[in-house]
Structure formats: C-alpha cells, structure tokens
Image 1 (cartoon, rainbow, N blue to C red):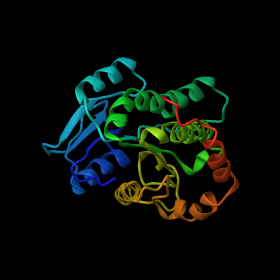
Image 2: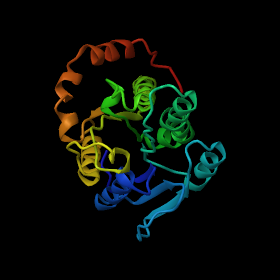
Image 3: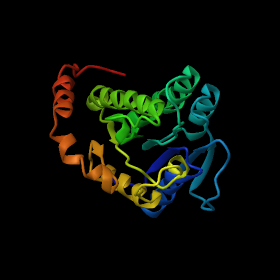
Image 4: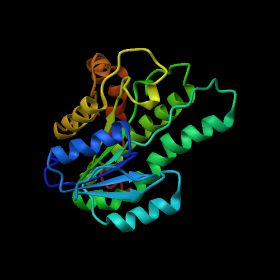
Length: 240
C-alpha cells in the first residue's frame, strides 16, 4: 500500500493523532483525504475534504458514505479515554460506543469501497488493549474489544484482498494523555510510524518507542499464534 495517489478517510481528524495523520497523508502524496470531524478542520489544502462525522451517529455515517463514494484506506482514529473506576455503567457504555461500536460501524459502512479498491482498514488501538491501566479501565475494555474485532476482520477479509491493520499506540502527547507525566511520543512521529507500517504491510503496527519495545514479544507470542491458527478456520468463501 503506497499512499501516493490514494484516497484516505481519517476519523477524529481535527486534532491530535488524527490531525497529524491528515498532514502525513498529504506529505506522502495522497490524492484526497476525507477528514472526518464533528467540528471542521483547519488545514487549507484542496485535497482535504471535511466530512461531518460523529462515529456514534448512524445518520452522519450514512451521509459520509454518500459524500465519499470511493476510497482506498480507512483509518479509524476517533476515540475517548475517560478517567473512571468502573463504578458508572454510563461511562463504560460511552467508551464502547465511540471506541468499539463507532469503529465497527464506520468499518462496516465503508467496507464495500475497500473491497472494490482492494484497500486497507487501519484501526488505532492501544497497548491497553493488551493490559489495562486501572486509571482508564473503560478505555482499556473498549480497546480490547476493538483488538478482537480487528483480528476477526483480518481473517474474514483476507480472501477479499482487504488488509486489516491494528495500531498499538503507547502514550502520545495529546489532550487524551494530558494528566500523565510520562514520556510521550509526538503525534507527528506516531502518524509517520502508522503510515510506515501500512506501507510496509505490517499487520500489527507499533509506531512509537514504548510500543516498539514489545513488538517482537507480541509477534512471537502465544496470542498472535492463536490468531494465526484460528484464522485457518475461516472458509475461503467467507464473505462479510
């Protein structure tokens, strides 16, 4: 997957990693970048097409499909990370609505375009999909669910030539991690790492220093081996 000349949709594109992904796609020669946001975007480039897209809003997703029409890459970047202690079910439900169901609904809506283009689906996950930080357990739960979905989609779509990539993000210097006094990667370096992984056809992308420190352990570990074995059960005729 070479981004040059490709059409890309990025959700949560107005700030942080999403904003950096838009700029990186442009830098790599994308033909068009659909920037999915709830509030517009401040990038003045004729290749950037703002798309009103709250990933929890079914009507906005439907309208986005009508606006976009053709696509090579979807990057599911929208996310929230509330601080909680699992005492309030509404917080868990909201994290799942954005980080899991939003990702699922956007992926499903644009899947016909990706099949036609033999394109790529990129899901921004987190190292917390593997082990939760107890300060943000609802976020970790939603990302663990998103990881399982990513692995399932990868197996289900392989025969249809749609590649599915999971991005394991460590701490990134965005509003989401403002309360954590720890080393953080810049959004720009992470965006570059994500596109490097996509162009290198990496199933699992580790775009920052912290995530790269566990990359070999994940790729050679028992969970990844189970994923490979289970994928073999998917019939070649499976259609999603």
